Length: 313
Image (cartoon, rainbow, N blue to C red; front, side, top):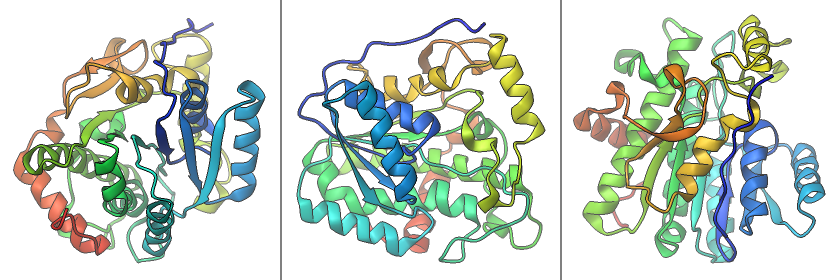
């Protein structure tokens, strides 16, 4: 059996938190832990039925949890703009933004509502647009922004010649690209916040390898059953061999979100062999994320593609 791993969260009473991808799996556990620590947790969801079930699950553990749903399709720029309008109209500063949602390796190439390759559009561009739309609230809350990456970001590259994988789709390479782009953006966000006095601290995390829902059956992605890789991951996880559990996989993001000593640009992940499992801890930034010029290029292209701008911030 895997060894139980956990961390203690500080009191988050009075803090407003937004968590993407919180309707099930690892994201639900992250949202639940933050709510149990006293935070007001806003959960933007695409599927209201799953969202309501997630709220009920959190309240079974924490009956007085302050949790609520908002509507969001991360693969739609119009939906992202609508969520930004809703939260800005509410006017409550955001203290913590956890960008956890993601999709992984559809068997066939799929597109977002705006014509982007699905993984690039959802994992990266959707979160870029969300940060842009929420920037006034993030600045008002002097927020910490946690971007959830993947061990897949430690190799691969940005496919600049075919960013949307229209000529030769490779699901795993496209997934790695989306997470590399997301990580480069997150690091550039912290640099620009420091340069322009936005008051935002941007940090990164990754869950290691665990039997999360990313590789589960997802008919909407064209995957009617869980992958063989997920079955192997589940077997190793159950035996406590190298890998993490769904519970431990969320801990690096929670540590990134609440570590009082967190520096801008810090990266948190499991500390076991290969950073695949184990207790969460700060670790070195992947080599794929260290090129500041590449990060600036990702930032500029992302602003253009999402039709957003941080220039007037």
